[in-house]
Length: 438
Image (tube, rainbow, N blue to C red):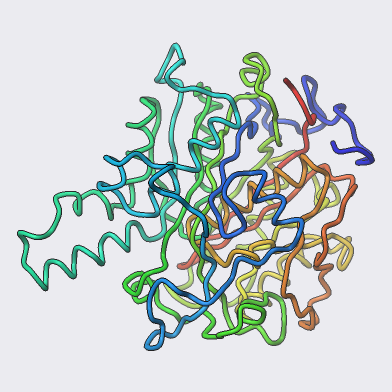
């Protein structure tokens, strides 16, 4: 923990606390590397520094004319040099969403000091990514070519660049990873669902998994495909996205995400991983089973996912120190999430800190929960709760919304909550670990 954090390596290094590894025991799964490409920065250091400053990455969309579109503000990644970060031969084959995943994965592997090419057993490593929309920008360009010039002008790479499994496939090929690989499609809940699957794979014998997601949904085609029912039409980045406020008018989209190195703890310690950020202590997923669009009639399934994740971590709600909320920015969905939080944490209504750092980035689709997990792991690592920005906490939900960084917070456990369009709910509990292991 950082100085003054109030907790030491006793929480979990080579020993265990109650429930470590989950209520059913087994191989312990940790996060040993983080790669970020987001409106808050490229790389962990830049991203975390911007987070603590409360730097908002929302801005008017500049890549194309939004005059005839219902969305005008988004979280946009600046300074992303694809020519430097992605090899030429991969850039022509892939969309921007895969470029970001490739770059984030390189950063995560470097952060973990894990070189797949040096592994004795390539079957012991895996890749899992989440996907919400695929390669929209690439697809739009090729569709335009098809209708303007004809099929002879459509690149052969169209068949793979838009594909929702493109990032997983390109990552496994680039790094020679031959173990379990796959893709999960549960929209904004996908980042938690993939680390849950990574945890299951590690318990079954895998050693490490690249897990996470990135999104690049900022093109006219992407916005049209995704629909705008729950999106904000605001023009002012300071007010367009305000979760848990009476003035909430919807969410804003964003691009980017995070890739994590999820690894078996003893292996990470044995090979001398520089940092173990957090233990993935428990996960859960539920579904509203209501209808494809629109909010469910109640918060029961979201609360159930939260409770199950906490129980599977061997904990009770009293053990949770901070909640990373989904923060839809839509009044109906915000009310449901607030009800779920108040239901689960009835012992501490208004006392448990709730943060929505994605107010700095917008909602990143399949990259949203992956980035929230990165935020939560960094929060535990630095013993600091990251802030939400642009809040207007007038919603009357009774939540302790964090609007400034809270240092020396004595964090032990963080709950990350995520929802995806169509009724997906997911939750994950991260447990603090020793600050340095290398």
